[in-house]
Image 1 (cartoon, rainbow, N blue to C red):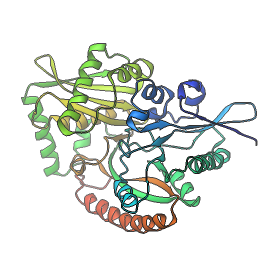
Image 2: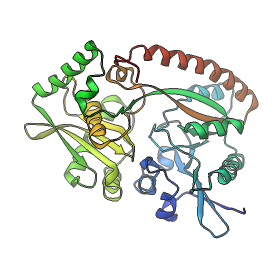
Image 3: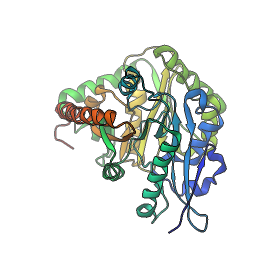
Image 4: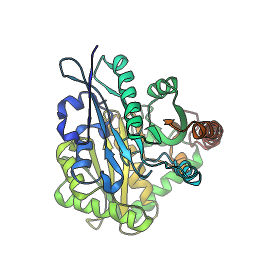
Length: 380
């Protein structure tokens, strides 16, 4: 079947309904509204080193049948698949690692399809999309092409195309059909259950309650309050607060049914807030901030409120973000994540392949060791 390919730096030029027909309902980050708001409000672009190069594939009737969210990157910030050591190695050998091409959702360590396809077209569009990405990499003379947080099937397909596969680990929760939070706690061993109950009690005894607000119900004041907490976290811990208040307000208006704000309240005033994204089956925890430290408040606002939300709304999975061994004792178990990498320079490709083989062994050992610290009486 003949296809025509476009490369766009402005996703707003693509019809939103056509794009969203390619997107899994459990992947709100890939929606047109989310990605275009990043572009519209300066959260990506040359300033941040994320220049859109999205691939658009149309059939003979000019229907959108495939796409790739793709960026020309001038740094490795906001990717969560850490390749700074690779960049340093290139520099030590007098070579340039940047720019590179990256297929990912900016600032979002959530696994999901990167080769997007209309229903019934996956088998036919993956190959031309991957070829187009590789040809763009050749044309731009970038050092490398990376597909980040790919799901299992696409990871294996990319492996078959000759990509180097990298394994990492996150901590995810899976709903086993719990009737309520107490039923979930009943699956814990006594010590871990007691510790978790103590953490929740610390928050209650501090006089803190919670207000959960859907994105389509949040007021301008709610978004301004949350954004203040979001930026304060970066001010305190370092890094750049790339997501603007205008960005959050826009996605609140355009895809608010996929957003959830959790406000921690004390004496009727907010003292902390967390931001979550809601898919058909999955809750994704993303950002949080607070005015002052309260014992266990982070765990309550970012984990326990989200767990209760999942149980109450029948969501099957909770991904609270990257890293964090402390999540294991709260029921978030080690889960593999994947990325796929093509490097132009053969010597570096061979060296990185050897490194990835050793790293995969280490990640597997790490996951096995952490699994032994599961809080559950029986393995889920």
